[in-house]
Image (cartoon, rainbow over all chains, first blue to last red):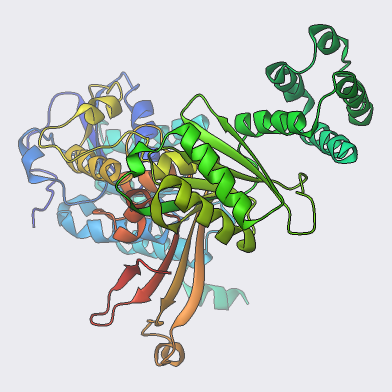
Length: 184
Length: 344
């Protein structure tokens, strides 16, 4: 089992690398095309269907600063696949270099439990959970802007802050049941 | 006879959309140029039919001429009604030598022997297909031209496509067909659909086939989108593999527009969480139908995008391989996995 490690390689100057993991491989392509339009930094996008990443690419692969799991909430398999991929990440990534992106959350066909599961998963790993609209071009632009903000921090391009610090502010939390009882 | 001609013409005018009517009449060529120019296509269909009936009487056209008009229309627009495919089996030694005139004569005479009142009309299309229109009657009634059966046969191939056939007529038709084409038997190919060209292409395998190759073929190049330099696919190889497998199973390029597939399950119910059903001795019968605008294309996409696992299960890949869209699945006698039963 080859773990993906956050600090196995030296960083390149003014460069950030993002890994998009999506089982359906639909939204990641469009998102990547929007992401590379960023001009302030050299941005590399790696696309994958699931982890682990193939061993052969190991030498050509730059240091990955942010891993994004795109979960399509209409499909249970998408969530399962993201969950299964998590164990191929080095624990170091969970200090602010992993985030989840849920798509299709507004779809009426999505069972509420699936979103709750995803939320629980993100909260237990202290990761950020973003929501994105994957049908429109605007949605992809918005999603890429949000990811860029996190990515720049994770790649160490923003002075005075770190990924760990940012993730403490943005990480997903699940409202505990006890609080709700108190409200009643 | 006159009445039948009139009602057939009226039915035809009602069936053919106005935009096709002009072209069809031109192809038919039984009206003079002046008559064709006189026809006012903006009037109601009823009035249009009246006008056409008047012209046909003027030109002394008979029922046969009107059936010719119908055939022209059906050949150009075959996607109406259900088409069923049949396959001729066990050819005799002289089967490859059957040519059109001989086939025509034999088919007509044999069908006439079986049923007295039957009217058969044949037309050879440009693509080597023989189109046969059969108006059935029985011993005491005239052939009913209002609901004819259409049969399409490609000479020297074992495939026959039929639409609007009742089970009683099926035995008669298959007998005449077997004798005329010099075969021993005919069997149901378990393929049916509304799109005639789709089921023909599927059964005769007239679409781009992809074969296993050691070196990446044109498929790879075709699917490489002008890749941006900063975007890299980590699992590109696996993706190409999946696409190759999907194309091997379903064919490359444009696929026949098959619209539905039916699986009839006669297997035992297996679900560890549901004891009541699992323990039942009898098989759990149900029918699974897949429908889509272009089913093969969707299945190929499912496989190439990884939604369906590769290698593709024989349940799906046998649709194009065996040219069927109706399957009965039964339990194997030994072993838990299901199999496709060739007999229905």
